[in-house]
Amino acid sequence: MSIGKVSEFNVKTGNWTLYVERLEMYLKVNAVKNEMWLPTLIAGMGDEAYELLSNLTSPIKPGDKSYQEVVKILQEHLQPKPSFMAERYRFRQRRQLSGETIPQYITELKKLSKHCEFHSTLEDNLRDQLVCGLRSDVIRQRLFAEDNLKYSVAVRIACALEAAERDSAAVEQAGDGDGLGGSGADSALHAVTSSTSRARTREQDSAPRAFKGREHGGGNALYCSACGSRYHRSDDCRYKKFVCGKCKQSGHLRRVCPKRGGYTGNAGSRRHMYHVEAAECETPSADDEPPSVESQTELQEDLHHLCLNSYKPVSLTLLLDGFKLNMEIDTGSAVSCISKATYNKYFYTRPMDKFDLVLKFYDGSRIKPLGIIKPEVRYGNITKHLEL
Image (tube, rainbow, N blue to C red):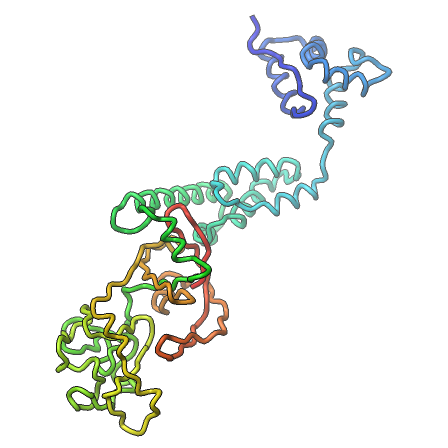
């Protein structure tokens, strides 16, 4: 009783090389004698394949050829040898596709390398293309940091990091309080990335370290006692000599006056505090008296801070280059911003591109960004490269 069977060869869609390999395994496992290999091939290949073979060997009959000659004739007709330069070009152009896992990407690279004639340098070329073609900048940077990186090590590390990212995303998605992958994930991400209402997302937890220790009223407040900003010292504030419109004392603005009703002196409370986390939005009240003559445009009534008495920022948690950051959503902003401290902590390996625009805040103040980066941002199952 024979083991397995010889199926017919499909001339239109079949792979002749693979067909011959399977046939020879069948012949060997069934201990078929060498002189019977050609008859077995002809008997099993099917009518269409045999007709093609007869045309290629005419006027000689296929049975008068040797097994090796028949295999070679069909090989050259059905699968002519491609240009190794063209194959190497296709190999070099291959990048990991969206939704394609690293193991799937590696399989495709091996398939493309088959006719590249890399010979002894095959693993080096596979390693180089694997690393350069990865979609994840985080994984690529990790591989760049390896000394004497071998192909097998690159595969192991890349697959492990991808699995870790996938597991981390699954854990975050299962959580009920971090905003990753919860209900409405797609609509929430759309709110962040919409082209008609580009959201400004920024971290809420980092006042620059250089300003720590500047307190107003005790506690753990970290802001300027003259105007309420969290982004400079009181000594550097341009309103440090203004006369308060409430208590008529110099050194602070009316909105941060200790005698103002309801003021708690605690940066953790937002009651009667001007919203300055995004930048130094320092507009004095009309009641505050400048140390010298100021234009009327600078002495605006800061009524807009009243609507922030019970303000609670809308935020969600995102993965930026693999780091979990809590970001505040502001659909009225044109750009997404982070502080220099956050850049130095998480994204220092990313070089900043030049950013020529000057940003203008709603109170008219301006700021010149240090630069712009494009980290990989993940929310649920959606991944994009967005500008910060």
